[in-house]
Length: 591
Picture 1 (cartoon, one colour):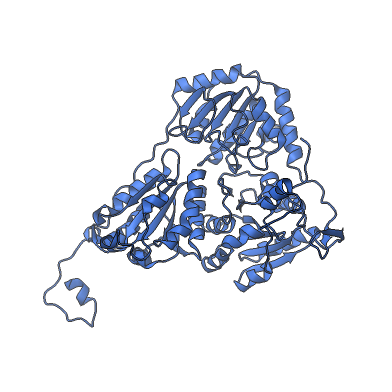
Picture 2: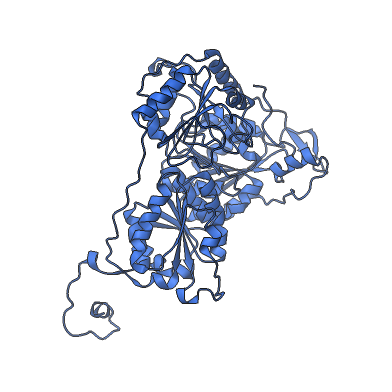
């Protein structure tokens, strides 16, 4: 106490010099020690909405090199943390307060769990002495999050603060990645916790296949006539993705991606003799919603399917209806969680590392080259944007009326422009809705960590993900494609982007309805739309009010120049694209 008082002139100076204390040995509060351990774990940002329940952590962040990104909603904070985990492999960190704050963040925890993405959510809690008394904003942390997180833990011992953080990071990254929820009672945070050094971060295992397992898989490839590889999951690198695609192309083995894991491998390996390959490589598309029919046929017709980092789940298999009975090899870290159907060989291994071992083994598969070639041709047709159709205008009833050259933006034409303009390592983000069908189909991925989109179908993720992507990779281009419904679920995070210097271009597709649900209604209840109409603002003017760039585009031929202006603005930008409300998806192409 003598040291504290002598530093403040308003207090009486106590006699006698204070003994020097090594800063590393000076006790910290539990809240400050949490921050110190996050620093030691390599965390560079935390996202959150402040709350009185974790004031001591906020105080610890005041002098920390960790950047505190103040968001406008807890759902936005959670999605930003999830995006950082997806892009970097290190768990993204979100901090929210008790009760309502935790409820708002729940969507991101569910997404991280189903998407298998590492994430930490710190939740401020009521004082320990108030538990069980229906205190203000009290709730059961484990009861809420226990079914959709890898671990839920409450810090009741202040001296365990550093250990709890280290173990949580380890759990979030290990095996099948996922979210960890940490409850931090406000009174515990202010108690002495120990020296500032924290604890050593825990090593994360990256299991590798045994030589015998690799040889067994090679024998399976050599027996198969129509082998198929399906990739997915996290932590794919440029090396692992490129090596797999070179190996698969050399052996004429088609490669599909799991739903919204399209950036696991490069979609093309380039042209020309310097690559030693012809065509676009072995990538032949993705599975799940919006997939081409050719991809579904491959899953049905394969006589050997090797899943690398992705289980055969609900969306991938069209609701557990495709590919369940083919000879199956599953490569996942840990167990076979989320997988349905046959398993003939299970390898507990980190898939990107497994690939680097696989490509060094000798294999001479005798595959159906025509089958492989047909798949590549079908994928090329499916992903080539068709010429724009004649735009149409709205009449007073809201139906399509007479043609008008300055009425609507054809998203297929927009994708054709983006294919030409985007940098090779551009990061694409989007949430859930029919608007996502266009970028998923037409925008190629050539670099790892270039896609953030919810595999569980959560709306509202695209804009927070774009903020996090720009902050994590300030040198990379970021583009978000958002539906009008999806955008306004977390569009207020544009303020976060302006405040923290995030730069991206958001394309807001305005068709005045929740188009995915309207499409289902048109099939099941034709002529009876209900509960799907939207009333939208002028999104461009709304963006400008935040200090961002905003522009409305109503014609295909105006998009390129508008995109270039938005990109050159150096600001977070919104391009308000007016879409024909009768258009639900890209034009069907027979493949």
